[in-house]
Image 1 (cartoon, helix red, strand yellow):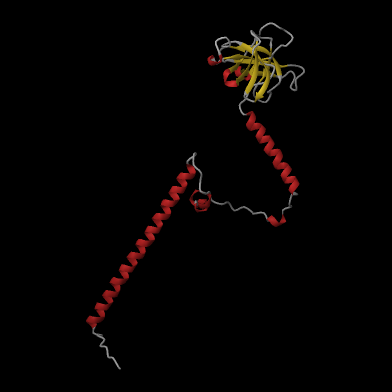
Image 2: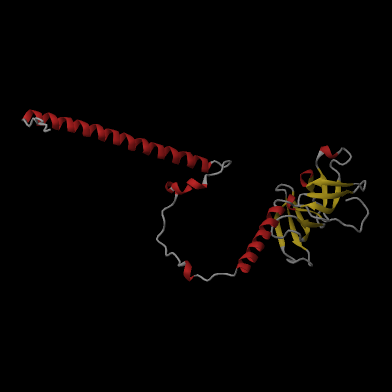
Length: 238
């Protein structure tokens, strides 16, 4: 059948419908703004959490989310980007060889670290827990177990002890005696003491003639950078 609907198009009815439509639109806009504001806050909170995690030295950064941290990146300079297709490719064997050399060098540096122990130098035991019979006594390093552990033969008793370098200290002999350089660019070279400065705890050295840098004079060398060179020709205690 036919249905007839009366549509009120009077000015009052049109005004009322316009007001209702405006009210509905405002409500929709408020909901959309609220939704967008919530999404923005969630993103900011997530970024803050990631940045805090990455800056903490004892925690790992989630690499799957690092790409969102553009706020921490420096502006990109306008530099020419090389065409990777035009760059020559190195043989895999060459790359692998260079990588092995670099790894070996880094491993040696890591293993050496801050070690100053060397064979054929005189040292003094400074750890009381080693025993009263060895405390403050001198000995000679006859071999190294590792960069930080040495076998020391005590001068008085002849006992051989395996000691950590933290249990030992270097020995500074009198002027004119020979020392071994333990640290720095001249590490391992022999020198003779020319002067001992008690105020600054340093010494002046001259490298021996048979050394790679023969005759070079070094001034203000710290005490712990050298130690007395052992003399195996003498049986008397050092």
